[in-house]
Length: 118
Image 1 (tube, rainbow, N blue to C red):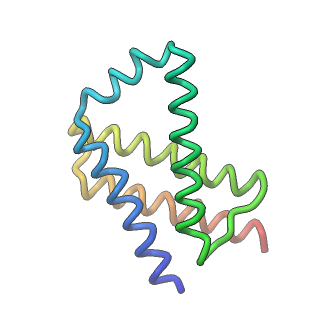
Image 2: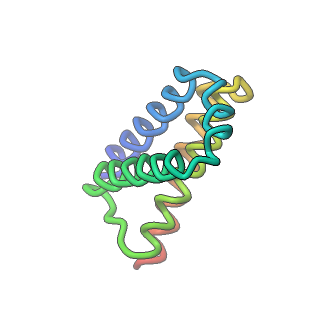
């Protein structure tokens, strides 16, 4: 059901970008300043893992991400989401542009995964 997968991708993209815009541009520099702390790094890794688990669950009715390639898909999506949301949060990219690019990146990575597991 590609329409519902597309809606799921759009929902994730909008939520991720919206969160960054709501948090404001100071979030990135604060996180960077504190990233020297092992405790904060561990916390960030736990947050990323939780985000990956949520995304894996949201996508599971349409595509099951397994193994190293599945982890690579999640890493690519979250990396793109972080970069685009930071740019949107800093006002470098408009919200709709960041959302469109994130949705496109997700679709492309998911297509690549699906084709590699056939």
